[in-house]
Length: 205
Image 1 (cartoon, rainbow, N blue to C red):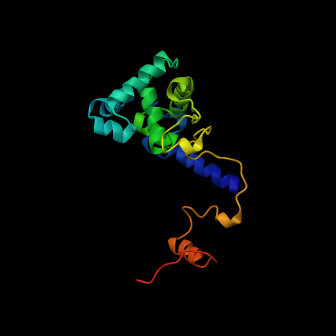
Image 2 (image 1 turned 45 degrees about the vertical axis):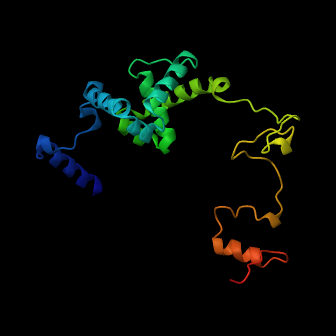
C-alpha cells in the first residue's frame, strides 16, 4: 500500500509538476564561483585596512601600523607565505578576527567570504608562524636580583614573576574560600567575613 502511494507521488511529480517548481537537487545547483565573491572580499579587506585606525582597532584590536608590522614579522621571521588565493594581510586579519571576538569559523567565513576550510587552514598557518616568533615577542623572565632596590620587588629576591592566570598545582584549604571570586554574591562574602571569630568589625555609624 505504502509503496503504491509513493509510486503515484513520484509519477505525479515527474510528469505533472512544472520543471521550474521542482526542488533543485545538489547536482543541479549552480556553483558559487570565486569570481563572484572576489569583489566582496576586496571590499571587506578595504574596510578593515584603509578606512581608519579606529575601525581597525575595533575589529582587529590593533591599529593599521601595528597590523602591518605584525604581517612583516610573520612573513620575514615566522615564515608565513601567501597562498594562491589568500594574501598574508587577509590571513592575519582572519586570525586576529577570531581571537579578538571569539568568533566561530562559520561567522568568519561569512565576513571574509571564504570557505570553512580556507578559514581553518589559514588560522593554523598564522598560528604556526606566530609560534616561531616566541623568542622575539615573549620576554624571558629574569629573577629579582639580590641587589634590587626597587621598593616593589626587592622583597622578592630570587623570585620569577608569574603571568596572570598561570595554573600552579597547590592544595588550597577550605578556609581560603577558593572559587568564591567572581561567583559568590557580595552579601555572602560580607556575611562570612563578619561571622568569623576574629572577623571583620564594622563600627557603628
